Amino acid sequence: MRVLLAERKMNVADLRTLLLSARLAKSGSDAAIEALRTLNPHVADLDSIPAGTALLVPEGPGFKVSATASTIGDVLDGFRELLAKSTDAATQNTKRGNDARGSERDAVAAAMRTAAVKRAIDADLESNVALHDPKFFPQLA
Image (tube, rainbow, N blue to C red; front, side, top):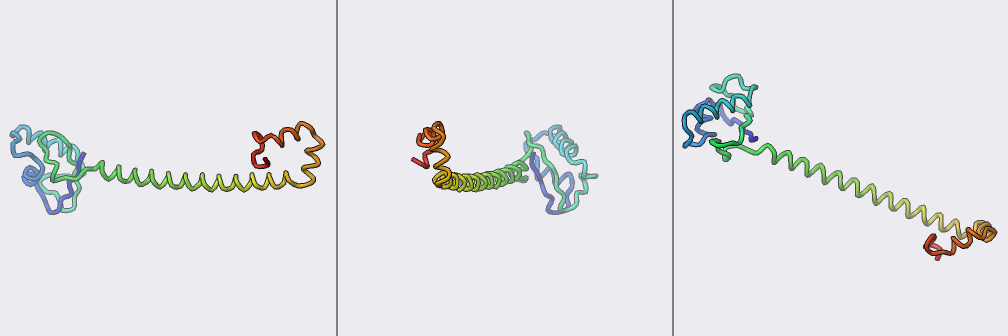
């Protein structure tokens, strides 16, 4: 699908000249204009198109692409921008979460080094073994 923005008042003859291939037969030309009419119900009369009117133009044989702009290009650009912003936001959220967890790990490690926690761990043999195993608490090794 493509779009044509009428820069001046236009009629069917102008559309044929601007949008249709010169090699298109009369029957093909009539069918192309009918397809254009079907895609643009907001235009009451193709013989009197006001300047500034946007027309949807089908992509197909007989239509020139040079006079129109792609509708999908803008959509993809907008999607790409939205995706980039969302990815950046998710990355920043992940970094903040990792920083917060790092601070929490440091706080737990510091608390485990206090005398009261060491006495409690020493009193419990199973906790004592786990605490000194670097596999469980690499920060304390």
